[in-house]
Length: 410
Image 1 (cartoon, rainbow, N blue to C red):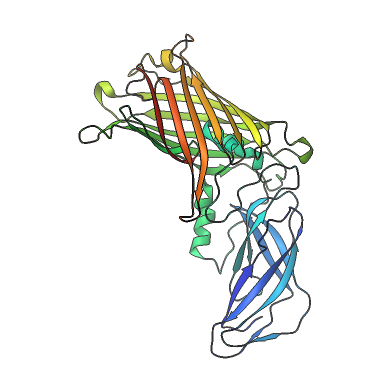
Image 2 (cartoon, helix red, strand yellow):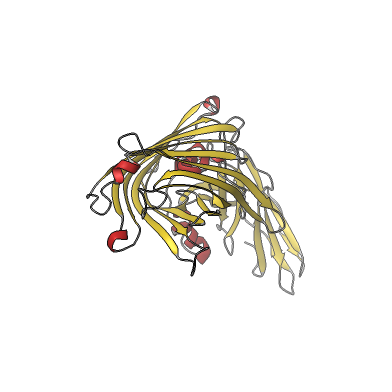
């Protein structure tokens, strides 16, 4: 084991590596003391590859060598290699602590083999905008095209654990995007429309031997959409819809390389959603529904492609404060998204009343925008709405408007 006083760092490859490949990493030792220190790391270091709350054991192996002396303020390194598990891709965290004075970690970008389709974004900090197939109404389902096959669910390692790493595994890694997130402005009142949305994984049904199997989870979702009359006196909020949900999510596995580019079923979501506007009296609106949502991908998500999505639902618990809702919202919504990888995307969302009238259409045109000066990546969004139900408060009134702004997630 190396002497005390050495600061250890694990350095991973700068380029993306292929699943199942042999990977070289470097164990860097910096002498922060004022005396010489011996650097003699073990020949084999056992560690873990982490993706969320799943892990794969790996063994880092080095060639035999003599102990090195590291002068004060200087550094030395030892090269190690290990083999990636087959079929695992995306952004992985390599963690090793066996035989070391403190755990070391590195981030690996693991890409799919040629023709295997897209992988999970691998930029560790500011990611580039996501592909259009992960956008609009189909965002949680389209992510199935880049799902990493589940691995053994392992407990958080005991000892030598940083608070940040523990928080990420138990909390942060459970969050995901549910619906688009945006802030847009237009010429008609209410001028501002913005939406925030996320989902949190309560539980995973994947077993320890679920390699190459679908991903099955129980999710809590929350979407909030507001219309803000910012140009009026005192700038009041016109209406806000609060939409918590609880649903089962089934994400189909990514297509095999020989099948990539055809028709890919993305999976489905099924559960319960509550929607209300928090108002009282005659302005109060409440909807409770059971829903099923599914979609298919045509083509490859990293190239020109289309996503077709359908959401069917039924009302439960009555509609006493908005009895005509079925006549304007009906029992389903549908959508089509056409886009090119992380380039431009056009999404259409539509619905109609139960008697095939009161047709509503919404178009979302997005363009990725990234500035290296501010290290900021987002989308320019132009949205056109024409129909009924943009707000719960006035769901029976027709409106049409164009708004533009930014979309953090489409």
